[in-house]
Amino acid sequence: MRTSRIRAGLALTGTGVAAAGLAMILASTASAATTLGASAAERGRYFGAAVAANKLSDSTYVTILNREFNSITPENEMKWDATEPSPGTFTYGNADRIVSHARSRGMSVRGHTLLWHSQQPGWAQGMSGTALRNAMMNHVTQVATHFRGQIHTWDVVNEAFADGSGGGRRDSNLQRTGNDWIEVAFRTARAADPGARLCYNDYNTDGVNAKSTGIYNMVRDFKARGVPIDCVGLQSHLTNSVPGDYQANLQRFADLGVDVQITELDIAGANQAAVYGTVTRACLAVSRCTGITVWGIRDSDSWRTGQNPLLFDNGGNKKAAYDAVLTALNDGGTTVTTPPTTPNTSPGTTPPVTTPPTTPPVTTPPGGCSATVTVNQWTGGFVATVRVTAGATAINGWRVTLTLPSGATVSNAWSANRSGNTGTIQWTNVDYNGRVAAGQSTEFGFQSSGTGTGLTPSCTAS
Ligand code: G3I
Picture (cartoon, protein in one colour):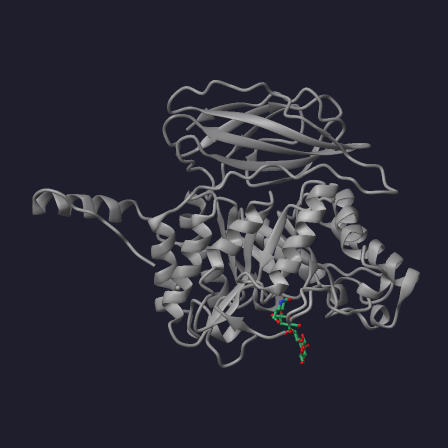
């Protein structure tokens, strides 16, 4: 793949006497978040990094990762060649290590990627037709099931559109199994992990161009026909500049009813810091741009050898680009409110039943919070997504009480601490999602055995 092309501010307005202005500046400085993840979280977003399992023993790397980021994308460890090296034999060691690192620290995980023309195991590269279609569906089912309940967003399909003026699909063994392979992949992924947001991910799609328009048309078609897609990922491997219509492009996808995420951001060349700031502000300006991932931590961790496209130098020091991103994040923008995943429409599998929120609208007192729950039920289990909404004033922490029906036992949970696995469970915020602005929301979720009927969460601000 090739890189393409590709812009911060702390605006403090003092009025009146100099002393009053100084007081405002001091107050603002004192409240500004000091890490990328904490600042993004204040806007309901994540700020993530691509992580390599073999660097988790590098203390400089891990110190930066744990301090700055609240989302991780495994750089290579979830790809087909890594997870299914021979047909039907699945190896998850490195991917599990990354997921465990993330989740034990309250970070979310982007799964990358279920299907891609590149980094396929040799045995799949040599397949075609129905055999490849079956292998592909089995791969999606097995991998998404293995990680069920642990993945915030899956890149279900990566880089399936061609570069150039046509706006059509890339030729690949997967494409040659039939043009419907992408929607089959999304339906299969939804059936395997109903709680994960499902994303189509690509590069050279940063402005409005033939390729991004081809993808736009596909997403519009999927939404019209009920194919389960929740998100479009723009990789944003950039050099020197960002297209002038970058934000408009994000917005047109969001207007289709999907989230947008900046999934592999790195920026080489001149104006690096300014371009990082521009990209960050564009995401913050689009309420459905839910997060940014940089494709590595230090320049020396980048796949773009010698181009120094990341936020930390080889020694782990913050670069000007880092300051530009943090300043843009702290300047603010819209706050994200993400709807739950759409119902599954998978043929040939038992579709999970999506039930509407089981709690009626709650009148929230000023300073308080309310909670609603959405359940995706399948035979024998369910995923619940709990939305916590602040009242008329911001809250700095929350506690949700939720009683499970008998027979239900929580096996996995994300974005919250919990007091137990059965009966009445207390759920409290993790460090990155405790602060919720007035009237805004954050979410946590869990996977459970049994039946998720009659769930009635209550929320207390702390
Ligand atoms: O792990 C082996 C090592 O054992 C061996 O000695 C060495 C020799 O070449 O190769 C190592 O594997 C390399 C792997 O990265 C881990 O470093 C592969 O050769 C190399 O091909 C692989 O490159 C990855 C590339 O995807 C593959 O296409 C990059 O790390 C990864 O950053 C890059 O990520 C992609 C996204 O998935 C999709 N979008 C584009 C992005 C950049 O290409």
